[in-house]
Length: 568
Image 1 (cartoon, rainbow, N blue to C red):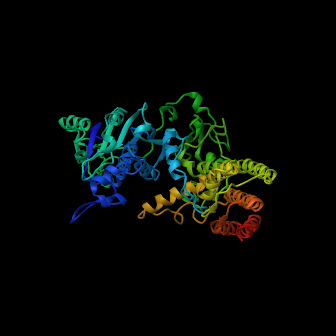
Image 2 (image 1 turned 90 degrees about the horizontal axis):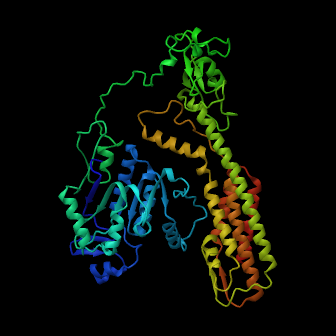
Image 3 (image 1 turned 120 degrees about the horizontal axis):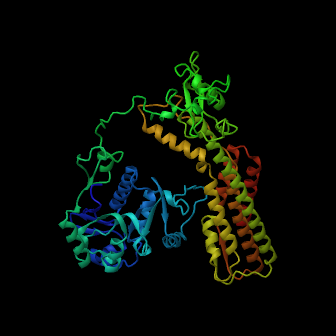
């Protein structure tokens, strides 16, 4: 970015407004009363959104991160409205991790409390509180007071016919928005909408005097700083600066081999006697100083030891992953696709046990071992989480059985539709009893466990998906071995089965207890529809069949029959 402070002006209307031949129209229930009343009648901070600004924020964040100067955690995106925050969060999640403040997270959860959580949907978690070094901060203006960021991007949202900025025009809100940046600040908004506010008019005048307001961001290529690059629309970033630079040829000469030259200590002539006397060949124990480098190239490890390439290749099992030349014995082509858990352990330096992960020559092998290890850790963690949750479920079920005779549902009629998550939320907040509060909390944890344990979230499959996306973008450069290195390989673990069955068990326990308590009292009427649960059981049956787990298939059939009996 050429400027550290800039207001990108635009005239794109906020969502819900459009222009027709008859004049401006405001969509929604308030539209019949005219644009002005429609705008003024909305008092909450969740209503207003602006799709154009959402897309522009995504493009700007992507550009800044790809430039490499600022990390994701150096960037904060601020917006006045919770609805805009929700849209920006969804958009940014497709590119990077996003972290919300606790207050914003709670407000979003309160809004989502009545929404259905589809049993078969397995959303990928994009909001994280633990990966702060890799996460862009996202917050509403009211919940960012007292905090700062190196780069602040502001989405003002409001852009309407009546030129009303809403509560964003208040001085205290404007002060918070404009005082959070340490290095740079970029405002995206319609200045005409905010010109009626005295404080914003002063801001516009100050920026205009220095040329820091305009219809286009001025970008700067680090290799060609004199090249003029402008981005007016979100898609312009991809066109004029696809990789945070311009599309001109660099022109800088680099070593022809593309690899950084080693230090002088690697030279057989200039190096010390200590390095010359290092054992380089693991087979005939030849010293480095005696090796003919033209016939036997050597590799210096990150831990400063040296070995002939042939010796280290043999240790790393290169022949199992690459086709070797009949004369040179060096890798000439890839072998068949790499199979999960095909490497027993990650190999290390034979002299000191140091890591060889940074050696590009063995990247395919070492990364396979690291992927396998990550997957093993996830499987172990899934098993541990499952047994902790199942113990809690059994304890809760016992408590429900022990207190069933004295329980009462009150006199209010109970109607339960939709899936188990929605029903338990209703039961959790029954005024007459807090009987199902603990079970609802456990089910929520089980749903989170299901998301983490789903096949799509395994480290192996996440890398597979990224590799596939990269391969599709390189249509003219196909991979050498049948497309991608993971073709035809599917990771199968029972974590997803465990989690799915656990969620359904919570639903069965809740409905069984509810029907039993109601049968003892029958003070109020009860209507339940468990069609969604039966569909979830059918999905579990198919999953168990496809992964060859007959025990869970049988359990799903039993759960399906139980739901049917409860409904009849």
